[in-house]
Amino acid sequence: MSIGYACIQIGSEETKLSSLRLNNASAENLRKVISKNLNALEAIIKYNIENEIKLFRISSDIIPFGSHPANKIPWWEEFQDQLQVIGELIKKSGLRVSMHPGQYTVLNSTRTDVVSKAVDELEYHAKFLDSLGCSDSCKMILHIGGIYSDKKAATDRFIDNYNKLNSRVKSRLVIENDDKSYHIQDVLYISERTGIPVVFDNLHNEINKAENEYSEYDWIDKCNKTWKAKDGKQKTHYSQSKINGTKGAHSDYINSTQFMDFYDGLHSKDIDIMLEVKDKNLSAVKCILLTKENIKIGNLEKEWTKFKYLVLSRSASNYNSIRNLLKDKDKPDARLFYKYIEETLDLSEDVGAEINAAQHIWGYVSKKASKNEKARFERLISQYSEGKTSENSIKNFLFKLAKEQSAEYLLGSLYFYIRHKK
Image 1 (cartoon, rainbow, N blue to C red):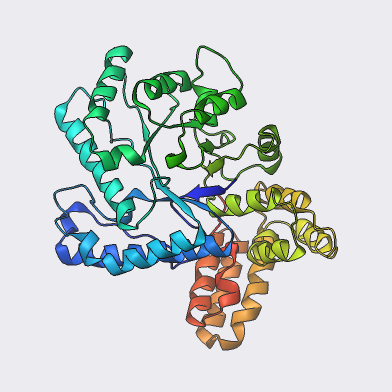
Image 2 (cartoon, rainbow, N blue to C red):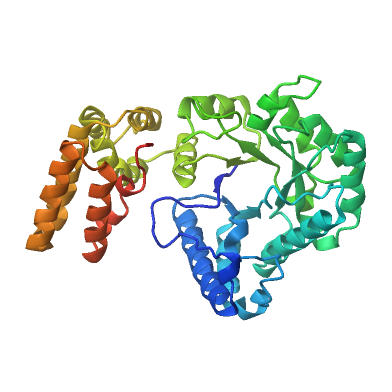
């Protein structure tokens, strides 16, 4: 079983993807952004390998305007060397990648121009995965589309248009139940007519249930039968609802207790689980460690180096509890470790705790700080304590100093990347 995440890696500047507006999509700008994005993807892949993450969804925006007439660059040729390096990393590590064309890729539209654009988009995604040299187990996930007042006709239209796709697209395509129009039973019907593998999405199933109310494990078993050997291991999407969020919104993090209940219910089924969650890789690493048979204390200590200042900025009590927990080197308790982390993430802003953490970090950068920078820090602390500025002003200032001083120990801290929701 592999557990992974989608598109964005949190906790590093070098993995950030860039974008372009259409009116700025000159050949020169496109080449710059493509090169930068491929460098970012390489950094993400290396991060995944280092953290034993074997499943990753590549952003559709990796090549700006990949299927749009504005991008006339033969990127698969010009950037062949970069693509080959990334592809070799993927292949040698056993990482399985995928892509997920966006909501406007609608293969069953009543409009021929929309269908034509959808085909172009699918061909772009397939070409990108082909350019990496990925096997056919690296898939493209697609929703069925709209109903257009007649679900049967829309379903037949999807099947007809699927049959017209080229073989490279067909070999990579999988379909998924959505939260509005096509429930899992609808998607399995389409699979029976076409042979397309099916991804089961648990949250979509909660919102948009099929008429036959099987358990999610029963649906997973039914979807398993749609996967052939050439398609690789069955994949499923797992997510949780955001508390007080809009219907279908993904949670900020994966709640470890809920996830382990789901995981235990799988009874060791050998499937790949793609997490759809706001904190991306952070929840992926957490779930991997929670399900690890022989977790080492070093695994949690590595996590603690990333979380410690974030925790300190919200709860000195939880900070001390985790430090005490990690003193037991022989029996690392991942569930309790993440219980404290999750409790901390749910806390409201505490001005005193934020100032305490900021002063700890200031201790690392103050020695090389100028007189003006020292005065600036004191001024920000004073303004924050009086409610005249936000925590973000302090964090941005400290992050700038950490970058200027190449303070690697601080730059990897999630303190800079996870902010209170305003």
